[in-house]
Image 1 (tube, rainbow, N blue to C red):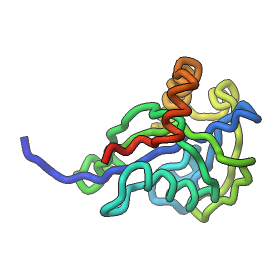
Image 2: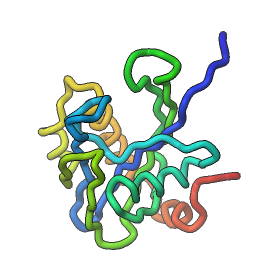
Image 3: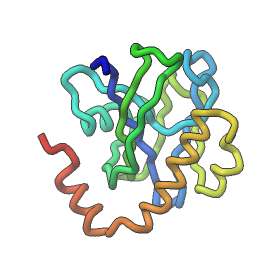
Length: 165
């Protein structure tokens, strides 16, 4: 097996407990990958940056929010375009909650915002679109984990973070 290189990324599924809904972002029509698709906050790590630092930076850049990661939903491995090593990404998917009342400020990367419950997301996310199908899987898993993860563990994550250094 050839040892190659790949990029690392994060995804932040933001849950507002007051709304009982997740933040969905519609990618700008001029984006090179999945234009017009609904997604959560996503982004790549910069050189020298950890997953948690990238998470906070990307959320601030894309929606202008400060969040606290509650738990890790899972990991991901995919190709952002053709199956070429230049397009290969591995990532960590976080469940996050806003630190204060969420007022979303969209970056040029997105053209629309929507808060949706898991049931609402099932209705408008397209199962035949790979990016939106992935988001549906993320939401389904988040729904199970949100009910199963003990509150004490979420508090611990808020206080200590996820980076082990």
